[in-house]
Image 1: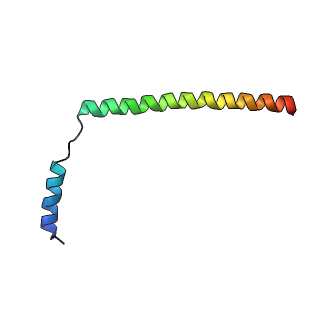
Image 2 (image 1 turned 60 degrees about the vertical axis):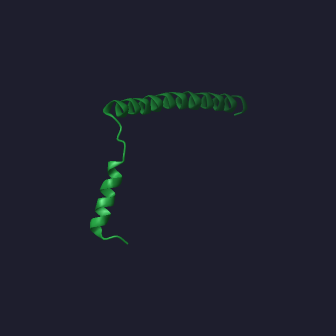
Length: 63
């Protein structure tokens, strides 16, 4: 096991190897996440609506 000083040096060396995203990349990926969340919300809203209408129809006919 390395001493704490060596551990900190190795940690800093590993962090220096990390490739951080640019501001533009962060903004684009954030926008895509929000866009996909909206798309999926709309999709599941309509799926839920279709299922609800179908169940109401079945319960009206057989209820």
